[in-house]
Length: 457
Ligand code: PXG
Image 1 (cartoon, helix red, strand yellow):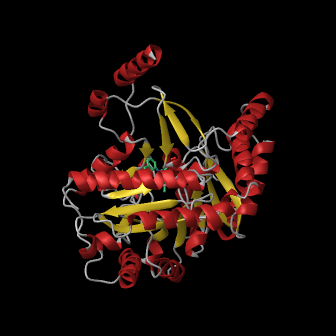
Image 2: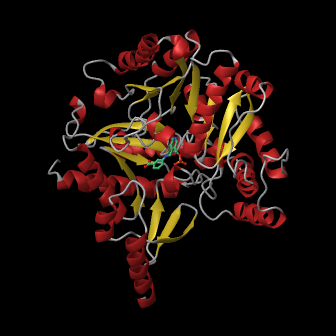
Image 3: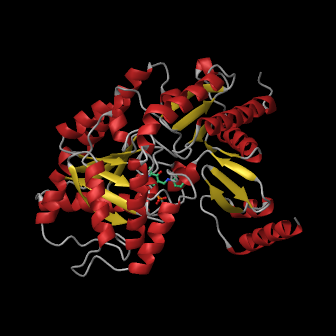
């Protein structure tokens, strides 16, 4: 026991001394001390004190096949022995990147047959923009350079990703952003719908895209980018009027449609890609996270034939990373996609685990005195906390209420994330019914504790 406590204290001290955490108030965190996570299996994590934690977030929306899958370890170790690294710049390729590209072409919708690789979701979105700009230049329309994104979207932390993202608190810390990015409002009915019904509001928010294209001039607009459902922004599922209208507007004005599938891809909603859940057809898809189940970093961009053919025939495309298509990452991705496909994990999210999770959540939380709405499909959900759910009245200090609830949950050994006053769940896709029950019970306990702390009954 002493050993464990000593090592926790040592890790915390060294972490506080030398490690700056992402999206964290490091001084505040150092005062409290980080939780040291040392191992994981299935949907469970263990900290350095031996406490077992159920992971309701699949790491950071990525560990789709769950922790501890031998097949991924073996793929990495075999590939490291055969060929730990080689590039794809010198007129060379290697088996893992070939296999992965072939598999992605089979799994993605039919018009996606060519893929570029990188190391993260941020780089995938940067790469998508490079490809889109290249496409328009080759089409003789270099003036089509604006990209329209949405407020409260998350597209990464590189300069391009963070500029595309619509998080005001991120933009505040960016004195210099990428040029030619414009934002429209998000389809967040509960928070911003006012007197409109959800469908009318969805259509109104989509119409902002057309207004923005007209304002900028369609000749100047290269692309629209959106997450099929906003992930970090609160698991916001737009009303059914939204995506068809966005798609229609993109087509009408010849604006390319980029779907950011970094969270939605690889089974999260029960489809291989979340845009299939909503039924729209993008021109470009960006991927990361579930591509390797987070076991190793990798991102990818899928180009539809319309764009890929132009780029492939268009001469040298001056873009790439040292680790584009890294052989070990690609081998892990292949092993991961085989598990998702051959073990029927994605199909099970659609037919069994997903419906069960959604039903249990709603049974436990619908009508709760501080729950305003529950969004989600498959194994992803956003739970809106609200002061007066019926009136759609949110807490004035929404972020603080979400953090309070998140802390209750974390202290009770469930990882549940807060985005403002929405509580987010996104467990590994292999979660069993019993584990779903455990997640839902703990989420409810955290929300009950939050209501009690706020004196709401
Ligand atoms: N697009 C989307 C939709 C994402 O969710 C990225 C791009 C960027 O991916 P990388 O691999 O560069 O991080 C993401 C990342 C959160 C949280 O708090 C979410 C992400 C990253 C960090 C925190 O929910 N998503």
